Length: 227
Image (cartoon, rainbow, N blue to C red; front, top):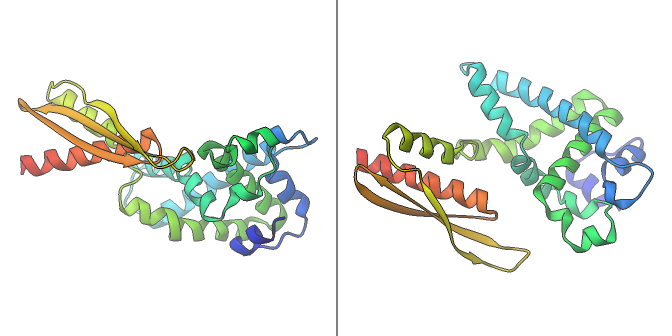
């Protein structure tokens, strides 16, 4: 059942009970589930990611490190990593939850990834789990950081409007594309800046992601006009 996952992560468990526990959602009805490992894995992630950032960004202050770590261990970031190893395919869920595509939800996948981290630590120790996490930081998440995925563009745009005493940005869903299980949202954002109306669009797999994309596009638009 777990062969594909184990090959993907390059780890062979000594005690598969840890992995089985990590892959068992509370809805499954088993006597144990992954909530305890999720709690533990969250702490392991914070430790490993914190050490990684302190070494990688020696010039960052506490606030900058905290902001970056917050995104790297967020549901949206862990969801990306979990999908890269097809973690949802291995989750043990109730039939109704599986039917409702619960294994594709970002929060559920993020929790399962934390549980997997906890399981790897208990079975293999800190050096192995540290290598596992760092490999995925280097290959998947840090390239996204370079593209400013971790920046809260909506808050930045709102702060700009407030400082200029302008009306707050207005977001609206323009349209949706794709199937119900592979939907893409297109969102617009409208502002009035120095008396001039501006409108930009962004897209994403969720409304929140699409709003962030639209806000980023608007910030770039305003910066170009200012220059």
